[in-house]
Image (cartoon, rainbow, N blue to C red; front, side, top):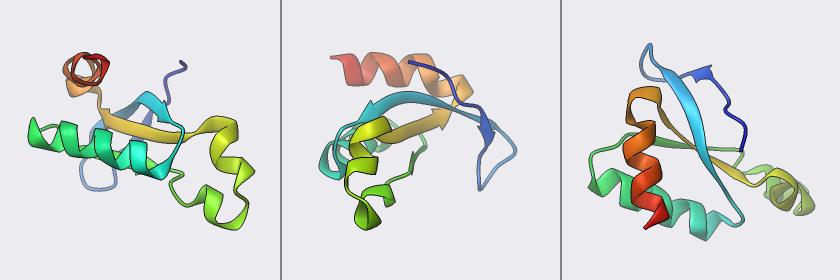
Length: 79
């Protein structure tokens, strides 16, 4: 999985992609798991499939976290 680095909308910290979800439901479940562990998470491209559904499946919904939380977040979603 390639890392994508962009500035967070709310803070001045880098965001990194930790997962590409295949559906909006899967992305929201992961976001909920991370939020319950106090890890800030953003979903990028979550609306891509609303106008052209195959777009969601081509690259997925990107689950983004702060770089400093990336290892902890990856461990949470892998288990």
